[in-house]
Length: 140
Image 1 (cartoon, helix red, strand yellow):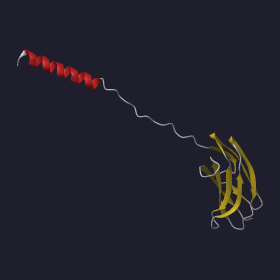
Image 2 (image 1 turned 90 degrees about the vertical axis):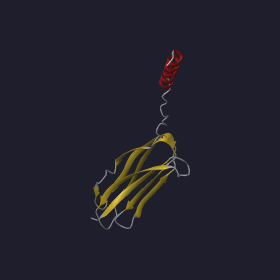
Image 3 (image 1 turned 30 degrees about the horizontal axis):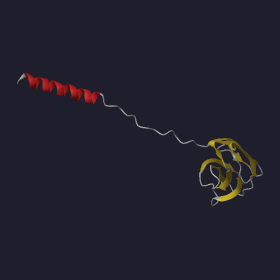
Image 4 (image 1 turned 90 degrees about the horizontal axis):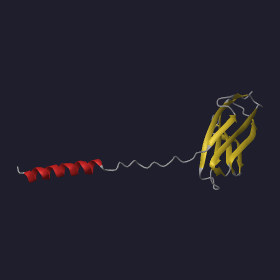
């Protein structure tokens, strides 16, 4: 091999190394997670037992940094054909919404109950987040 062949091989090697080492490493663009509704309910407690005539207090707060447009509360008797025994819809605005409601246990059979809390993120109620709390009611 002559001298120009060695120079050509050396130049090709250097340019190949330079080209590959200077390649920019692009990190994937990751969107921040969408904000979610924060539910902070102190009552009813999950899995609590209530006797007939006891008052089930529904106390808590929902917060959403983009603003809430209301809520809906439903108590459903899961042991009795998913019968709704309480329902309350409230249209209110704000980043924080306080809930202070109650229902009096009037079931006639042992019943597994579920409180469903829907936080509405728009006026139509189509965009919502839900939290459930389960409890049990005695008929006596």
